[in-house]
Image 1 (cartoon, helix red, strand yellow):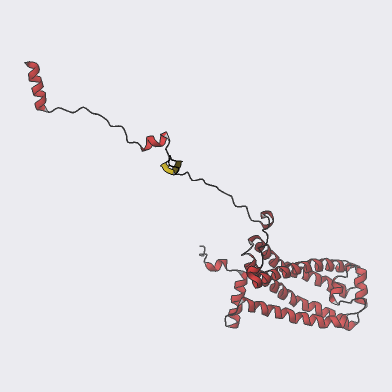
Image 2 (image 1 turned 135 degrees about the vertical axis):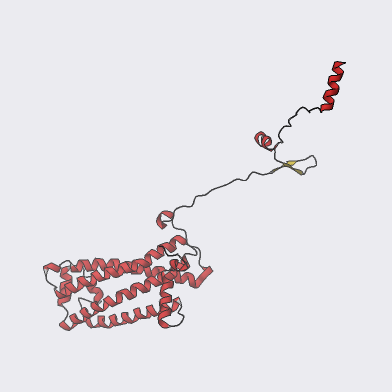
Length: 281
């Protein structure tokens, strides 16, 4: 037995998150408040990573964990790990473990921001809004790539010179590149939605995407012509006279009255008797 599909069946995911937050806090929570809370959590985690990066920076890793993510070659990655002290390696392992908690946080934050931007952008450009929804959902793909990247980096940190993990650093570099590209796309679309929401009517309409890219089938154009029921003809006084349009012969035949049927009138019995008496005489 199927359940009746009500308004809750088409509830947007962003609205569902907002209602869950309202239920958790026990009071009405706006979407901006939910986004602000998620963003504050991301900022706090990034501050913690910045503190760890200051402790592990050296000549081979000038940017800390970021340098390790883009080492790309086994030789460069092994040299970077060998240049760290045992205490610094412990900090790197702690940062990689902490990153597993950061993945669902930043991916949900950017996705939620993209969902809010879709509601604004779709009012001016519906295909671009659908594309933004895809960009928002791709943030969880970025988080999945981040998992593969961290596992490869942990393998390279534990066995920096082993041949079995020689592909760890190249795999980590590829995953990090795709991950950051998806994150930048998500942040860019969220920024576009925020700009349209802030400036409103001051922003020009964005050009429509081709239907092939947006995945929207083209709408058929049907043109119907209405036949005029009357005709305007010029008269002798210089004006115009409205005359009804003449119907075709078939229309006139359908609208005309049927022909009358002439039947002979029956005589009464007295008239027949008189006629027969005259003939007898």
